[in-house]
Amino acid sequence: MSAPRILATGRCLPQRVVTNEELSRRVDTSDEWVFSRTGIRSRHFCVEETGLDLAAKAACQAMDRAGVTVADVGVCIVATFTPDHASPSTACLLQRELGLEEDTVCFDVNAACAGFLYGLKTAHALLSDSPRPCALIVGAEVISRVMDMTDRNTCVLFGDGAGAAVVRREESRIWHTVFGTRGDRSSIRVQGPGPAPAAIHMDGKAVFRFAVEVVEKSIRQLLAAEGLSSINDLDLVVCHQANARIIDFVAKRLGAREGLFYKNMDRCGNTSAASIPIALDELAESGQLRPGMRIVTVGFGGGLTWAGALLRW
Ligand code: ACO
Image 1 (cartoon, helix red, strand yellow):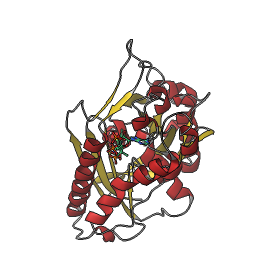
Image 2 (tube, rainbow, N blue to C red; image 1 turned 135 degrees about the vertical axis):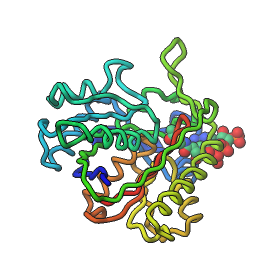
Image 3 (tube, rainbow, N blue to C red; image 1 turned 45 degrees about the vertical axis):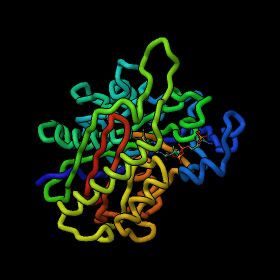
Image 4 (cartoon, rainbow, N blue to C red; image 1 turned 90 degrees about the vertical axis):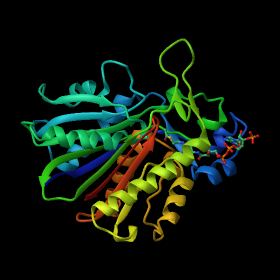
């Protein structure tokens, strides 16, 4: 069996930090309301930075740390639902920015907050007949560009950022995945290009119900695939960082030990496809994620989509 091995990660967050307190001067909300409902205290918003800027910085960091050069990269996938342009894709622009070879397979995927794992699965498959051994997968979002900053229901939830991973295909590693899609335009929808201003429309309660259902189900399926009877047999669980209450709810349902589920939404908000690679990079950089650890990661979001993977770091 072959599996993708994540050689290294990187991340880039825009410089500007926006606190709940600052947002409470724009809409009728408070730090207390946002933090108690979501676990979010602050997030980063782009001012000058583009999605490509964030993606390139995160990708360069991951490549440097992995010790790979452009000659090693045969696949470049950017997961995003907020690209700088409908076309060219961010992945194509990243090819030029990084100087990747012209035969590199470059494209964007849009699976909302599950996008990084859709990208990882796709990259692993494409590497099977790539002339080069490595793939670059980047989650990059500038969600502030599609937010209605007068809508308190959504403008407090999201943030901008990018996370990247360099992956190589290796034999005999653990690799179980689950994927799901449930076509639904009422729970969460982002206004596309057109005369109306950009905006995220979300039924928060419906999204909450969907998220806790599919995250718990995905983790149970992944544990069963690996023959594990308890979530506490894992070393770490890294879920999409939408909301602390979603994570706490699932952790409790599964009887997880304290600290097993990582959380960083207090500082980043919900960065959609970027949230999992940003979290992985924070964990790796701080030494909490070490080689040999058995981890589960799960993404979920608009589409509706979800995806989970059990892998060895
Ligand atoms: N500040 C103050 N009050 C607010 C705010 C705010 N920022 N936002 C909503 N409210 C109000 C509402 O208007 C409502 O007032 P009303 O009763 O007078 O109408 C009241 O608070 C309660 O609203 P609810 O929606 O019932 O609040 P709830 O407890 O469900 O929390 C939340 C809302 C945080 C959005 C919750 O539903 C949730 O976490 N849902 C999941 C959303 C999510 O994670 N989305 C992202 C996943 S998908 C993706 O990542 C793309």
